[in-house]
Length: 96
Image (cartoon, rainbow, N blue to C red):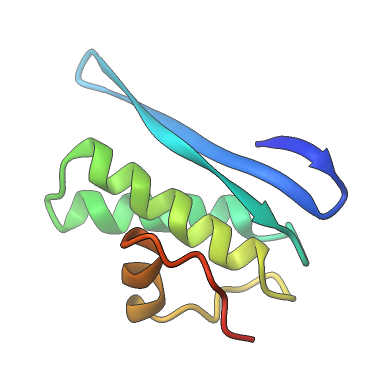
């Protein structure tokens, strides 16, 4: 996480697994509430790994869910699987 301002952050991530480092592409997020976004990142990565996605795909899922959590108020995710899939496809819009 790079904090550009109180409401503008750049999120990314990395995964070290089985001797290999994988980096996620970073994305800019308009933050409403950053609490819970780290948990969202971890949940997205784990979801991807359990679904047997590649490490890069799992990281992208983690960043997408972290961004969705940070862009909505509260410390829990209201994002649906469809919201995450739209974010992965490049639709960064958040329906509030």
